[in-house]
Image (cartoon, rainbow, N blue to C red; front, side, top):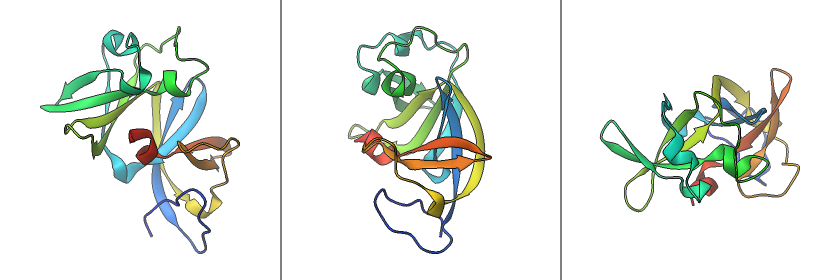
Length: 153
């Protein structure tokens, strides 16, 4: 089956899916690859990082499509302010669009690689939150699996 578990569900059997790993302020996160349209480099992110609301940090146009940007380093970081932005942030663009037809995009520090994981190994998050599906280990390192649906709500 190529689906990730919903938080709180019981799972049996082998549930394999592919995730894309990425970094935010030294922590490793992941999201299912089948929800992603593309990953892009961001040359000038100053307009996005100066936004007052990191959940709606602005919009950019990519291939004639509008992308609503969520500044994840500020949302999930130690504060809403990111004093030390990485030099070449990335943007994960999702298939999902908002009510006005703009795709969602997550500004991240760095993109990792895709990995096929066993969703049955997903453990509950340390803290109860709707934005995190759970945690797992990939290549011996802890990874936080984000729930893109609840982040986009």
